[in-house]
Image (tube, rainbow, N blue to C red; front, side, top):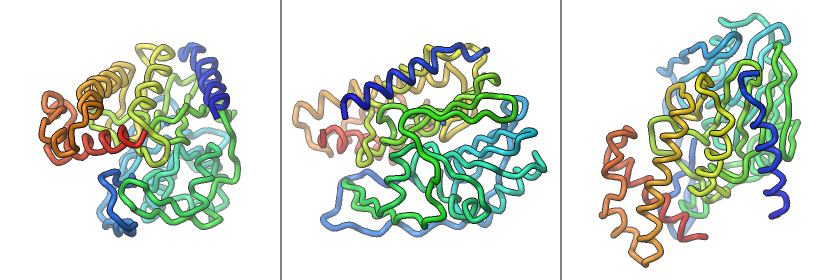
Amino acid sequence: MARRQTLSTALLIALFLVPLTQLSHPSLAQAPTTPTPSPAAPDFSTVEIKTEKVADGIYMLTGRGGNIGVSVGEDGVLLIDDQFGPLSDKIKAAVKALSDKPIRFVFNTHWHGDHVGGNENFGKDGVVIVAQDNVRRRLSVDQVNKFSGNITPALAHVALPVLTFPDTATFHMNGDSIVAVHVPPAHTDGDCIVRFTKANVVHMGDCLFNGRYPVIDYSAGGSIDGMIRAADIVLPTLGPDTKLIPGHGPLGDRAALERFRDMLKTVRGKVQPMVKSGKSLEQIVAARPTAALDSLWNADTTAANRFVRVLVSGMRKK
């Protein structure tokens, strides 16, 4: 396993050091004594899919769930993530307004429902779903979050990725080389960052929450250390004009990723010593380790405390 992780890191560095001028979360709070079903889906009827141009032929769609990357051109359409199933028709309509070409591929940056919930609908249309090996592995069977007890049911067969890879995959389409690279466990154990080589655009998946505290899925191999490591690997490969599509939040750039990385380091530096000293979860939450940062990360007390609880729970399970 250690050898596999080293290989992934080496490939990521090798691919991303080429200059760019030439990517629903389960709750990770304290676990109940018995598993509980995941909460019911919210009402999607009022959700509007908004389109933002990122570069020539590349767009970001926002609605509810993870931000979608879109590549359009003569070769067809590639989607990066597909949000929730009830939004699929709205997503298709938004794509239709950009291109009359068919959607050929959906790439899943990781396994969470707010990024793969539309897989079944697109799979039934004959769209080829692609993801890293661990994503298909997790989507193929029920997932029980070991912290919250929430159960995420396996997806239907038609919703599963049909093409998977261990470390890297490249789409040669629409005049670009679109490179997906598996990072060592960060947000989950299946995260991929997707680079549009010629367009100077990177989709970070949930390795970047722009302007808000992230969800880190410790139950699926994620960690704050891994999130920081992913940012540290990617940052040296970004130019001042590189545009970043985050998993959540507005379109970003190198500076946004730097701020996110620095925030994670700051919070880790406050929480980790308290965990090691044996303070209780409630003592750590009451100490408000994120207080000086909350206004910068659009967090109220409830959201900030939830983030701290996630970190404490994950650090104690190491």
